[in-house]
Length: 111
Length: 116
Image (tube, rainbow over all chains, first blue to last red; front, side, top):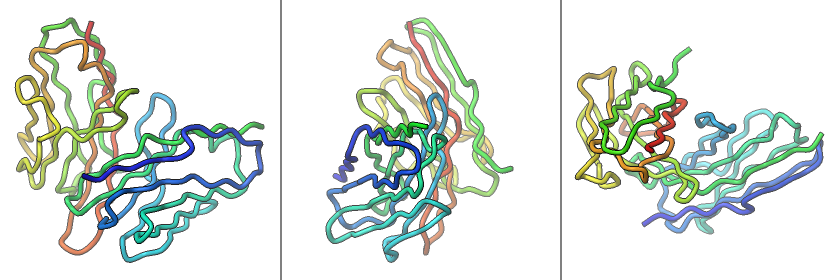
């Protein structure tokens, strides 16, 4: 059974800092990995999807990498802004097309 | 602006009452998922459908939960009878699954259920 872990559970950084959020998964036979953002009381917004054949994906200030052999993915946020404050969730698809989620990293960017 | 629509956004009900949550997936998506989010358990998969057929509902308590897709534009999740432990945010998501290629899941805003 796939298990997804996210570290740290919470992170507070000053505005402008570059930061890395970590995600690990136990079953390396993943089909793809998806990163989401969730604002308080809101739904999930898809940020990036990395296919199993890819090493990384980029969107604006966000870059997500995937290392299947080590069971890890990272989300890199460059030049963080207060508007980036949210909970970030990673989720793995092991081929059945449904996602197994980590518990999330709650990010606070201080102005 | 294609998006997944869920109703109601909030629901407060008394224990023992029936609750029905509705979801309109993105037009053209062939897969619909139901997830539940709680502080203790995080996001858990309850059930999902492909082309309106149930593929997996192993995450649902069978005695009180049921999920259906009456047509391609509507998915429902029912709880009967509801219990306080069912209090959570229920999310619907949809995606387009093709034989070759990943499935990106798009989530609705959720239904916040409180059972008192």
